[in-house]
Image (tube, rainbow, N blue to C red; front, top):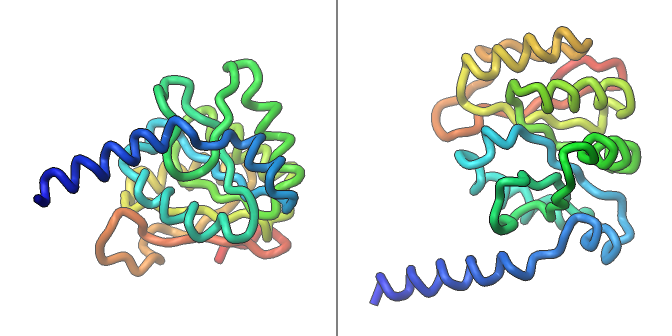
Length: 180
């Protein structure tokens, strides 16, 4: 019945997670420039389904890659992840920023994400950055302050016409780092 079908679907997804390609392998298999997904590991669980939706759409344009949380026991069915030691993630992010065709950054406010925003500002063509805004005004305002301190302005949360769901909107930038 329905319950056994749900269990079969869960078992399939769990088994599939054992065979997901790493980010490096996904880039090797697809020569197009990658699409890099940056986010705070703390924000990841609540938005995992949305990452899967992003992966389905963005993977059509090139390998959708991310750095994996070292605490994960299995990769997630979404962005292809590389798991690297704590002293190597920044080097990998820097390399991917330089060659990515698009960087999708989930707004958050952790020190690692603050460093990633700084690197985006230094290394990235602003038209290649897309910020995903979660439907949490307080968290977004904290992220907006973090960005402002790093030379990246964002619109006020009230400018998003959000009515439901975990995502309030998206922010893109013009060539002069003006948000839209």
